[in-house]
Length: 262
Image 1 (tube, one colour):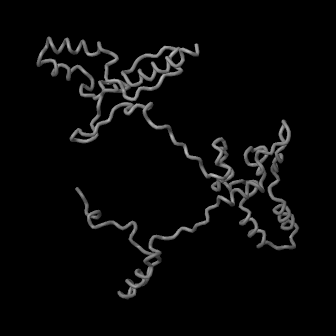
Image 2: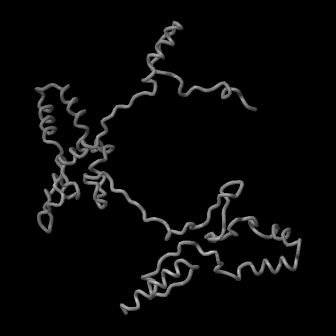
Image 3: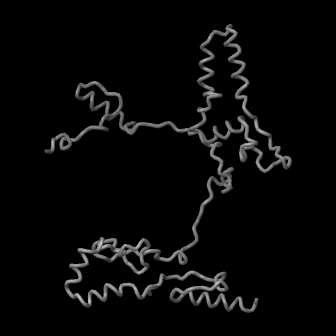
């Protein structure tokens, strides 16, 4: 059996450089995809009826075909899967064409799947947790609203009110939902994730907030007219006009756009 394996592999390599062929179950493990799509028809009998009618009807065939046939000029002849030999022109001069599965997938280079955020928890392709960096949902927890807003609201209330004192104590305690199991699972202590954010059972609010802080956007948006603000101010002052708030121009309609078209 081992002696025949090189022979099967050699036969498969030879088949890959030639026309397409069917592989047996024995040859399949060593089969190599063909570098080029076959140009030979796999259905040589196709078109025999239309050829027969065209031979008998002559010039009348095309006129009758356009009457009785649905989409007579369809490029793929109404086939759901295009024929590999069908060339679709991409340019009017016909120099650039496209073919179905050409070049063949077997002749393409392997897919390069780059790793994300090398050196972080997301370098592991199996770590698909979204909550450690999903800042869009950070303040949507009705049980624990935005801490900064809540802190400002409590600071405006009277300090000697018992209800305010109780509310501040609850705020200082933080969310009372599950603090996480600290890496303790049914199979014992797990130390594969020191942060505890790999599994939701071990996740806790402190580690989650630290992860969200690290992915919080730290840039401030700036208007497009920021670099030409001096030019805008000078233009209005030279014409004795009030200086507007920012630079105008967006949303204006050109003269041609205001002309009614009947």
